[in-house]
Image (cartoon, rainbow, N blue to C red; front, side, top):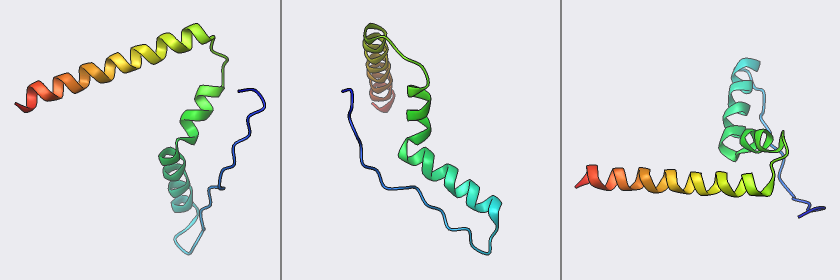
Length: 75
């Protein structure tokens, strides 16, 4: 996926009369909801494909265990 371009809409926050602190808080919330921070952290370091695959499998196993735990507690 080298050379892949992704078109994204810019994240905007209007600074109104409520102040700059409020606008920064709103911007952080928007970035968290859109997954921008997670993506930045993911791209910060190169991860070998074998490690990436292992991490993906571990995450899937964790979700399965969590789902199984919720089902047993729900009954």
